[in-house]
Image (cartoon, rainbow, N blue to C red):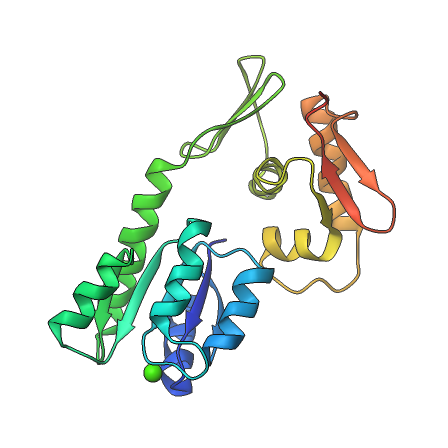
Length: 219
Ligand code: CA
């Protein structure tokens, strides 16, 4: 599930966007000021950030400079129709912008377009004799396709994008399942077991005591 961060100090607008994107199948988190947004961006991974320019604490331009090195696409939400501001946003590296007030359908179209653009340039992932094709969601083991469920695939991608990093159970669960972790480890653990089995990865996916899991490159 794609995760979208909505940074907007007008709470009714943020909530409206959230409600709409959730019904379209996105997982959304709202931040109502720049500081809260910076904290979230530091702690969590997002596939896309909708970013208001005029914000309390830290403004959208400042946040953008912080987001850019992370490679997360950004769409500016702006009440300003002044061309200068829009050009500044795009020059700083925003992927698109939308002027308020906007039609919610237009916002969705832009969200989808930006995500598609990023999805198309996503690189395949490799580890040992396993290759993951992000775009087609096909996994190969020694050149032979391996059948994975949707969640097994998402979990595998998450592990491979964080090679050699110990991942906390709750964070891993929330990232893959897109919902709050309630302390039941069985779902996650059984998916890990199946991944180990299907990929022959007993030695690659390590259990980290009291933390969660770590994928090691074995070298
Ligand atoms: Ca604002």
